[in-house]
Length: 90
Image 1: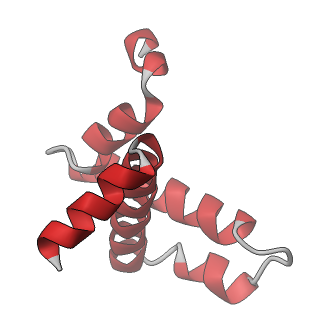
Image 2: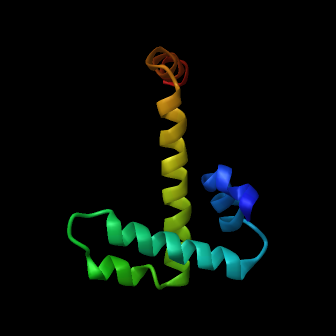
Image 3: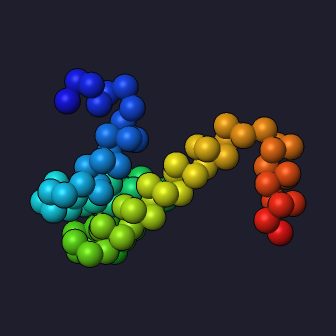
Protein backbone atom coordinates (compact mmCIF):
# COMPACT_ATOMS: atom_id res chain seq x y z
CA UNK A 1 0.00 0.00 0.00
CA UNK A 2 1.18 3.51 -0.81
CA UNK A 3 0.42 4.76 2.71
CA UNK A 4 2.77 2.16 4.24
CA UNK A 5 5.80 3.47 2.37
CA UNK A 6 6.28 6.24 4.92
CA UNK A 7 6.96 3.79 7.77
CA UNK A 8 8.08 0.41 6.49
CA UNK A 9 8.97 -0.98 9.92
CA UNK A 10 5.45 -0.36 11.25
CA UNK A 11 3.91 -1.77 8.09
CA UNK A 12 6.07 -4.88 8.36
CA UNK A 13 5.21 -5.31 12.04
CA UNK A 14 1.47 -5.08 11.31
CA UNK A 15 1.83 -7.82 8.72
CA UNK A 16 4.12 -9.98 10.88
CA UNK A 17 1.69 -9.85 13.81
CA UNK A 18 -1.63 -9.61 11.97
CA UNK A 19 -4.48 -12.11 11.85
CA UNK A 20 -3.72 -13.43 8.36
CA UNK A 21 -1.50 -16.46 9.00
CA UNK A 22 -0.45 -16.78 5.36
CA UNK A 23 0.65 -13.13 5.29
CA UNK A 24 2.51 -13.52 8.60
CA UNK A 25 4.36 -16.54 7.30
CA UNK A 26 5.16 -14.88 3.99
CA UNK A 27 6.65 -11.87 5.79
CA UNK A 28 8.55 -14.02 8.28
CA UNK A 29 10.04 -16.17 5.53
CA UNK A 30 11.06 -13.16 3.44
CA UNK A 31 12.69 -11.39 6.38
CA UNK A 32 14.47 -14.52 7.61
CA UNK A 33 15.80 -15.43 4.17
CA UNK A 34 17.03 -11.86 3.60
CA UNK A 35 18.62 -11.64 7.06
CA UNK A 36 20.33 -15.04 6.74
CA UNK A 37 21.60 -14.16 3.28
CA UNK A 38 23.02 -10.74 4.15
CA UNK A 39 24.09 -10.80 7.80
CA UNK A 40 27.47 -12.43 7.18
CA UNK A 41 30.31 -11.68 4.85
CA UNK A 42 30.01 -15.16 3.36
CA UNK A 43 26.54 -16.61 2.90
CA UNK A 44 25.93 -19.64 5.11
CA UNK A 45 23.66 -22.01 3.13
CA UNK A 46 22.66 -23.85 6.32
CA UNK A 47 21.27 -20.62 7.82
CA UNK A 48 19.48 -19.70 4.59
CA UNK A 49 17.90 -23.17 4.53
CA UNK A 50 16.60 -22.67 8.08
CA UNK A 51 14.55 -19.73 6.78
CA UNK A 52 12.38 -22.21 4.86
CA UNK A 53 11.12 -23.74 8.13
CA UNK A 54 7.90 -21.88 9.01
CA UNK A 55 8.24 -22.06 12.79
CA UNK A 56 11.91 -21.10 12.78
CA UNK A 57 11.36 -18.27 10.29
CA UNK A 58 8.52 -16.76 12.32
CA UNK A 59 10.47 -16.88 15.60
CA UNK A 60 13.60 -15.51 13.95
CA UNK A 61 11.73 -12.67 12.24
CA UNK A 62 10.05 -11.63 15.52
CA UNK A 63 13.38 -11.61 17.36
CA UNK A 64 15.12 -9.64 14.62
CA UNK A 65 12.29 -7.11 14.42
CA UNK A 66 12.50 -6.59 18.17
CA UNK A 67 16.29 -6.14 18.10
CA UNK A 68 16.11 -3.59 15.29
CA UNK A 69 13.34 -1.53 16.81
CA UNK A 70 14.96 -1.54 20.25
CA UNK A 71 18.25 -0.38 18.74
CA UNK A 72 16.36 2.33 16.86
CA UNK A 73 14.77 3.63 20.08
CA UNK A 74 18.07 3.46 21.95
CA UNK A 75 19.82 5.45 19.20
CA UNK A 76 17.25 8.23 19.64
CA UNK A 77 17.86 8.49 23.38
CA UNK A 78 20.60 10.71 24.76
CA UNK A 79 23.42 8.95 26.61
CA UNK A 80 22.51 10.56 29.94
CA UNK A 81 18.90 9.35 29.56
CA UNK A 82 20.14 5.81 29.02
CA UNK A 83 22.40 5.98 32.08
CA UNK A 84 19.58 7.37 34.19
CA UNK A 85 17.29 4.55 33.04
CA UNK A 86 19.93 1.96 33.87
CA UNK A 87 20.45 3.46 37.33
CA UNK A 88 16.70 3.19 38.02
CA UNK A 89 16.42 -0.44 37.02
CA UNK A 90 19.71 -1.84 38.27
